Image (tube, rainbow, N blue to C red; front, side):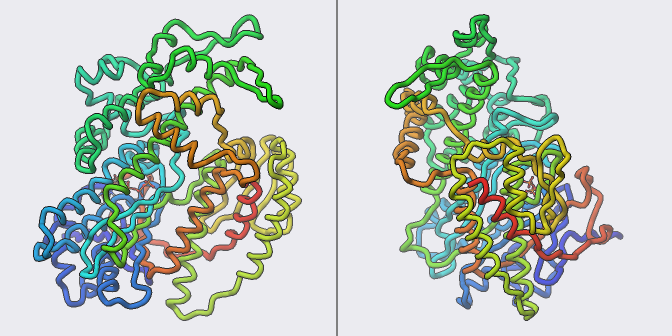
Length: 574
Ligand SMILES: Nc1ncnc2c1ncn2[C@@H]1O[C@H](COP(=O)(O)OP(=O)(O)OP(=O)(O)O)[C@@H](O)[C@H]1O
């Protein structure tokens, strides 16, 4: 009989092979109990529960550093989210004890809430892509909070870089975020009426809706919302906002024959109901999408937008609403599951971030994601070398100099207007002595190529600066503040208070925000005991006939050679 093996150890790393099918008896309650109760779990067959148990025992043993981080890595579709869920379920089971003095009810509720954060975040943050039907389009770090008796008393979630562009633009054969399809497929007649979504209506922003994926389960999302304390009225507000976004996608603009006049909307677009769903005045919404306000000193001038600009403003409106709604949800979840600081003393963190990305066209998002992967790889390499008692080569000095040097240079660049070609020339000048970046001077599309630890990636320069600034026209923000939807109103009013546009304060850009959150993540990782799990996708077609006995693994970890270069390039866009 062929015994299928899905886990093995490679040095200090657990290698997990995605079986692409449910494996009966691999993750049952009994198996959890077996690993948890074993005097020496390491002597058992390799399993994700060994990693989980080892981290748990480290906390019990109170050996410094007591806090633990479980770093789950791998390419898209390799099984990171699945593994993270497994780890959370493990702790929700073994770190809950019926013998606790606290009421059983409270204990159950917190474990359940922690687990219920998953379906909500997956519904709003995951999508069907070419590589994975349930691909996380954001990164997350979950801290499971343990009290003095090592019982799970709460959790907190930090998310990174939601791919909000997906709301308004999906690659061929990919889909928008699951939640939209869940709504469309599972709505009751009453909801359809409320959401202005008659059966059979097509939405431009919902491609491939005929495809059925396991994740299209609206009831599970709603049930999780209820458990986390999102009441029916709040749910209504959320779904109306989402329906409003969908309707926005069906709005079309036509250039006016008179250039001094705003673009036209077709009759269908006028009656589409986004204004009603987003609870904003119809005329003002149409105006904001088609006319921009230019400030000249104290005076403002109104200028009609071109057809392309109107579409960009429509997409921008949808993206900013969705991203803010996602952030609101994460904050709500945190408020619901986070324990009071006085009640917990240690944590086990589970990190599930985007894997290394290399597409045909790569831009700022990939640069950030791959930078994060380089940092994690570097963290892994230094931990591995420490474990092998090999002295680390010191790169800190050079690194600091590079960063400092470039930062000084970049300060003078802020707000400088430049096209892609000029920017390429500037970057090349600055980074010409770095062996890990190369330039193709003759290419039509200005780009640069970075030799990553995982392979070479070409990055398109066109649009990078704009993506980094990620501007939201002020007219759109003030329109949303006027919304009669209490949630939309709250989200955009809070945002305004959080980020006052005070002159002189450094601007928050995509890179600066990402860099800050990555830095704080790395700080946390450095103060915890790390455990690495590398998930492997045995084939690109998600074929389910492989096991570690049939796949030859390449465990050659190439050293990070280029991560310093990232700081330079990313700083250039700050
Ligand atoms: N241990 C497992 N047992 C059974 N199926 C699994 C397992 N791990 C992964 N899968 C299957 O593989 C799919 C992809 O896994 P998952 O979503 O966890 O990948 P990922 O690495 O998080 O990808 P992405 O980076 O795109 O989010 C899952 O939806 C599930 O069907």
